[in-house]
Length: 288
Image (cartoon, rainbow, N blue to C red; front, side):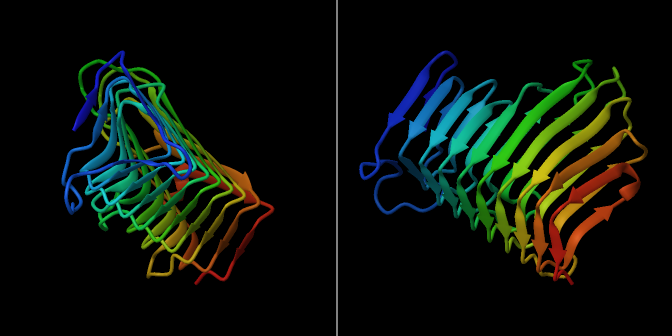
């Protein structure tokens, strides 16, 4: 394990044909070492991080920039963020076995930012409900008075996300708190991705609120994606659910130019009273 403390910066500067490889000694297996743990800043280019528990972990305001790198065969996640942000571009993330290629939790935290662009994300996860390609959860469950309006921003553009074990992309906003009113909001842009053959859902949204004076929201712009071949019984290209007792939990999805084809369900709205999906100028065909 390597720790980068708050205020410090880790730079990994490889090059095409001269990749910096960080792994365990000998003939490793997934989980052979802990990973790179970042509390400050990390900037990585042309790195290969393998056989850790977590390839790169960002904590408590950390900032990660990962470009043209490979994160593979890690036992939990390729990139794991806890109240931190990351920009990931041109990367390959595959065979991270237990959780996700990218796993994000923003807990009572505002201003979180995740960008994943032009990357290949495949064969991640172990079949748990949150597992697969990219998972982002923003939640307030503290009961401690630390409340208000919180917003996290997610941009997922130009990626190939396929053959992950449960979800391609899963965005989840959750509140469970009686205290000061406020809103927990994920603002997402999902555009020009190819999302296919994940074992349950291509693109999944969940806004849940219980016992709460707060509101939970997801607002997503979904443009120009191809979402295909989620073929198991009750699988869906796009799946959305609002597990809230009233309109405090809401999902709004808008966009155009998507191709949604070859899925069991093209679009599956569960509890649609609290959801609004408006997709235009695309193709929805060949779904069971």
